Length: 355
Image (cartoon, rainbow, N blue to C red):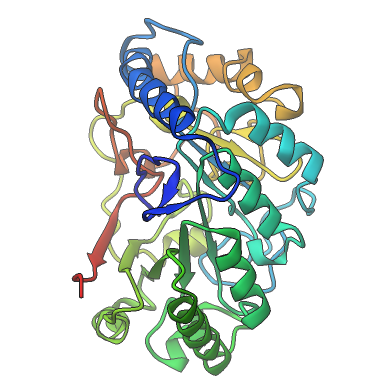
């Protein structure tokens, strides 16, 4: 989905109102950098179990959604766990604990984030901790009021999920969305961003699959413009090859890589659902392998016995957990001693040239 970048406590050169001091930002950056080789050693050898923390956290603000997209377990009605919105008391506790440690937080998973009534406050809370805040939207409810609120809150990165260069393709993929309304919302958002001088990075994104592949070039051409910072062509995530209706839409399926290795997500990222349930990654969309609840402490849970057991299974070549058994997405990235990446860097990123 996106590559992980380090965050220096500022947003594209703009200081964060009420954010951490310069010394606090420097201390956090140094601690995060020094944590990387420890985390890498833990991933490769288990030499430092429990001595690390995630550098990137995915927080499901809500799993309610207004669309029925054809490549999504939410849209297909497959996800069975309860729906809800993350309680702000829980969210504040999460950020108070790990905000001083992590580089990035992503406020979406299995729903439309803009449906959370306090999403903008969630962004502001993260920013006050010096966290790079990101989220994605299906655009359909990104009206002028919400657009201004997103920009005022200081969101660092917004992914605009369009998935089509024509009305026919877009409405076939994003079921219940209306092409004309989504285009108006995008144009309104881009115009407001320009007039406000807001530093939010805007990424237009299309998922490459059977239904959209013919639209990719036209999509790239349409959104190569100064107001858009980057255009992504994202490979279809099969969500661990758990849903045949989704896997069959892949236009680049290569099967399981020959040599399976432990999934780095277990050591580098945290995935928290709206009710506080910690999972291995968002591909465990029904929490079939719950790893505890972060209401008892994020790091206590992330380094707890259930997570350690799953990491141990991966180290011994046991990938029997339902979300892991047939997954190929684990191979999309591998960490190095000093760097990690986001959960889905298998993206053709087309950054716009500077004006």
